[in-house]
Image: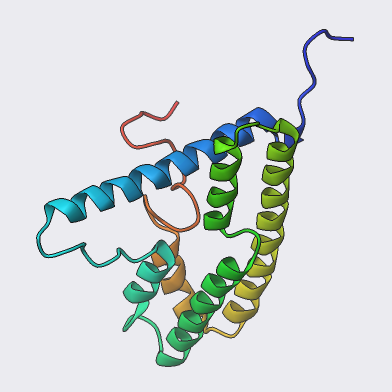
Amino acid sequence: MSSEPVMAQFGGVSRTGVLRIALLVSLGVNLFLAGSWAGSLVRPDGPPPPRPRPLQSAVQELQGRISNDSFAKIEALVGEIDGRFRSSPADPRRMDEKLRAMLGAETFDPAAFATTVDNFLAARSETDKVIARRIGEVLAGVPVADRKVIAEVVLRGPGRPFGPPPGPPPGQPPR
């Protein structure tokens, strides 16, 4: 028997790793919001319009490149996905609020913190499964030519909605 502590695992990532990821994401959001706020103080004409989210950007790019029927289906699907996230326990904004309250509390409860993160990850996983099934249902009714254009737009390069591009990171030679 090893003397090393046993860590709970989440899809191959330790609980400590999950917590670090959650905290880094929260830090990133907070830095973005602080930068936006500071920028709005410097600009006399107020804050800039909000940047489109990745899926909304993809929808904008699809306009005119796929049939009107397919575009209407994709546009409705993105609205449905957005609504599902906003109404589910997997909404990252709610998670940020909970983590901020826990971290700012006079007494920190590590078990409650871990349970909160566990519940968020479970809700996010379930939400992702429902969304994946819904995307499949919608795309089954889209002609193959339009699906190819959708794949080209949604699955390309950095900033794409579904993770990093395949292959080694830019600037690093393949091994």
